[in-house]
Length: 109
Image 1: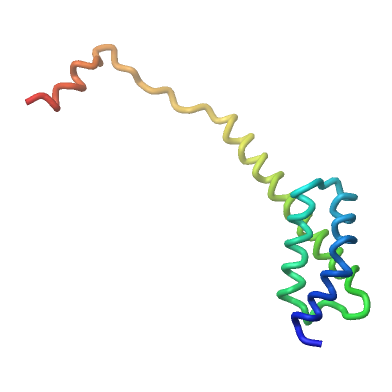
Image 2: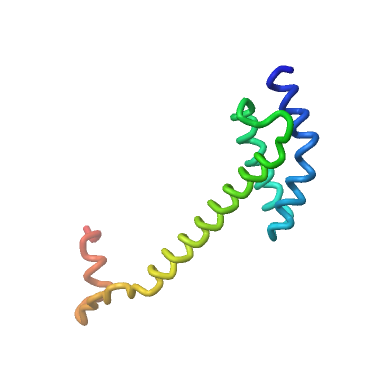
């Protein structure tokens, strides 16, 4: 069986179980479909590593790792934003003698 035919067979048998897996993990709609698509993309790239007899455990492990990476990424992003929000912007020194007239002076002829 060539690479493409093997992947088509894998896709036909694994797509629905992977969707159920993603939904069972709390993902919905497009997020679940994205996880399945990323999992199948990795399966396509590493088709030689996918077990022929029992591919689902291997695919579930890939999906689990992808989901963990997503959760870590969201957590890190939230932590960075929280730290950023705690920082106060430096106070700008406002000069009392500053006015629009001094800004317009360089453009006068």
